[in-house]
Image (tube, rainbow, N blue to C red; front, side, top):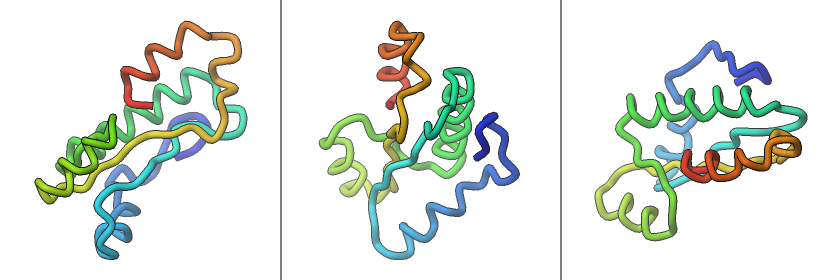
Length: 101
């Protein structure tokens, strides 16, 4: 995923390495460097599409990780490597929280 939210691969095949290794849940970074808020929104939507297409479970809580393991689904939660996207948009924090970040 590039900084403008574009990608050449929307298969989520990178998660296959985790799955093959027996990992049941992993984090996906939705922000890094100087991503603006719109780029973060695009990255979240991109990962949401992968989660939906692959039948993964979106993780919001630790209990979700346990549920994913019980249901034999791969779980994905979001994190940010940089919060610069919200420095001028503090109201976006609630939006990002609802999106699973």
